[in-house]
Amino acid sequence: MDSAVETVSIICIVFISISILMLLYRVIIGPTNPDRAVALDTIGINLMALVGLIAILLETTRLNDVVLLIGILLFIGTIALAKFLEKGVIIDRDLD
Image (cartoon, rainbow, N blue to C red):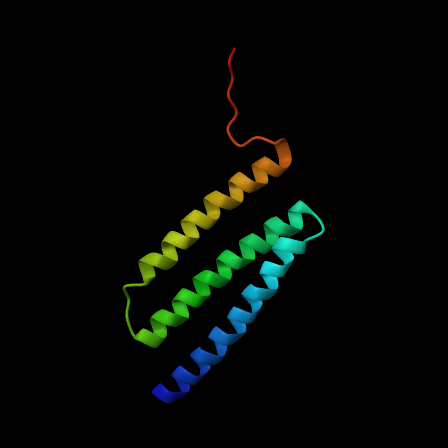
């Protein structure tokens, strides 16, 4: 059973890596800024999956914190990028 889990995990890592490379192309060449933002968000999700698969292969739970950290940073980055695309600024300063 361990051999099957390792084989499937390695196949998934290869496909996720290919997906990340294709998403990097979309980030660089993307026709619009929202397309680039969605591609960056998807890269973060793929990174979370990649770290999870590596944790399965290494048979450790120490990488779970890394997955959570990537998720938190991804959420904050997505909110900041969406705000920047909508308004042009990230931090509003009211100097009234």
